[in-house]
Length: 144
Image (cartoon, rainbow, N blue to C red; front, side, top):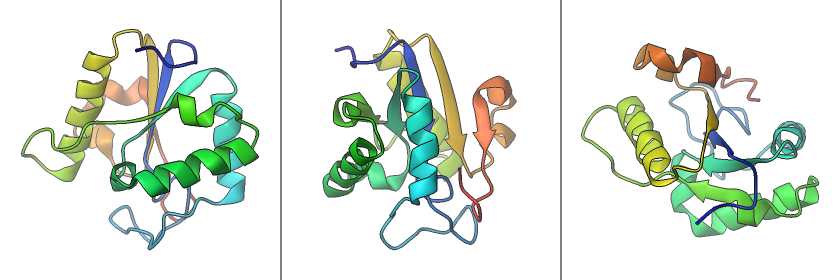
């Protein structure tokens, strides 16, 4: 079914994007997003895109609920209805390859999406250079 947003999706990692960690392989203990990063994300979501989580935090329902509540407080009242997650366990490759396969699987299941972008601290473009125009790599020490 269609999300209450336009035909755009933003695929988002949490650690190193919404918060700051030491390296792309680091995991924050609680995934707590920085307020300034949430405000930046809210500005993007207000343009009408849905948010598709790609990090391991997407598998934690409590975390997803807390993130949706934080986005509501940041000015996105419809955040919970515009959040999704990539499927888990696509492929047998590296974590980076799996992330791209999971994004691809989500896009195949959501054919209404015409425009999409990925924000991640991992070097996904090193695995698939064709995503260059749709990929923003963050510095994990700074985040979004």
